[in-house]
Length: 88
Image (cartoon, rainbow, N blue to C red; front, top):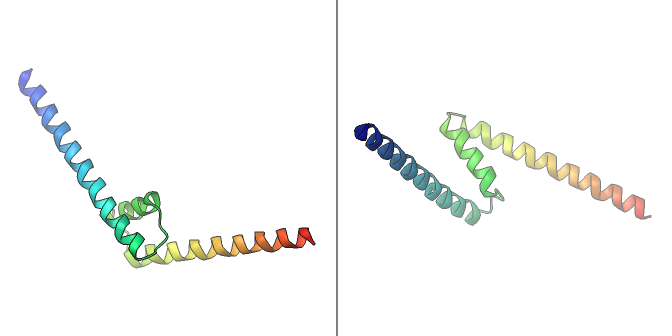
């Protein structure tokens, strides 16, 4: 039973190391993202990194992110215009 217990601890240790490494990588990527003014928050950046690790095409992912941003900007602009019309 002790051998099995050691194996679990070793696995737990590896999981902790992987989590720490992933967290560190995310922090570095977020800092680079911030310096480049990408506007991505940590959660979005983490999702993008996960998709890339799963083999998603980077250019296709960038196109989707850009399209979502453009759509959000159009929606925000439409809401602002609607609010201005209601004030008049």
